[in-house]
Amino acid sequence: MAGIHVDMGKTPQLMKRIPETKKSYIRGQMEAGFHFVSKINVYPPERHGPAMFQSHDEMKAFFAQLREGKIDVPYVRGISPSSERLGQKWQVRKSANRVSIQNKASYASKVQGKMQHPYHKKTGWKTVETVLRAEIVTMVRIISRRVYADLTAR
Image (tube, rainbow, N blue to C red; front, side, top):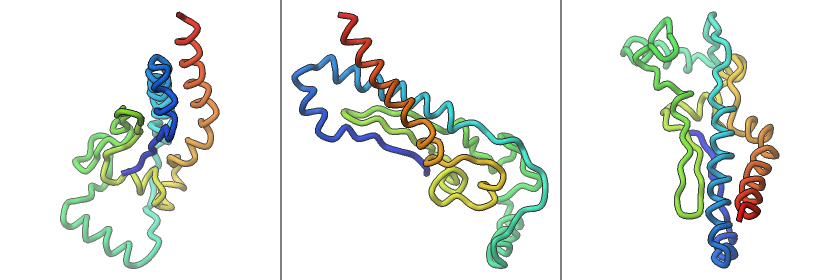
């Protein structure tokens, strides 16, 4: 699983004094989360060509899974039985004081997470960290604008 968690830390204690600010902050986090998902769930162009094995053991594991029917060749995004539809699995969820963004595809961490396989890097898959670095300023602005808009609307 790949994902990020936004923890409000001590902010909830301060927000008890202003309940509407807490709601606005959470709404802003949700909006920022949806913005993040719109950037991370973009598929790179399809690439056709030979697989790049990093080791002999990796190659053996690939062909063992192929024999067992766990891997489809040729693999077709979103159609092959082993596809978990990675781009569609991104979710933004809210709990009491936290907004989580995560992907439930079993292979998400190997495609877009910290354990990204070199093949996926070479074929253009963006990692969570890369997208977060690129979008963090925008995400903070989204949260700030939501809180400001809600507080000045009253």
